[in-house]
Image 1 (spheres, one colour):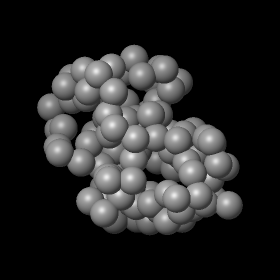
Image 2: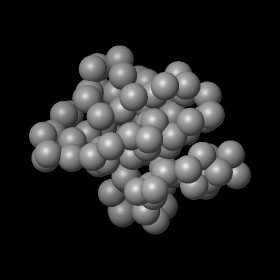
Image 3: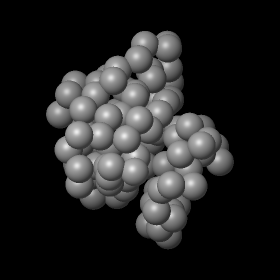
Length: 106
């Protein structure tokens, strides 16, 4: 079972087992990881599941879609490693991915 390491803005770490095929957002919300609001429930129609992906993992992710890119543009704290966690599906290749949570969700 692949794992995700969530790092809260304050540095608190959560190592969570993820189901292959579930989104990182679903993994976080199912396991009560603080810092992901997921207001739209994973429909890519808000940006409240914004995360920062550790650099080494970015190349392993599917390319960002136009919809995700548009949603991230709504976030004033967007950075080059910003992604929406609802759009990242867990795979065995992503076992150990490091996901940093921003201070605020918008």
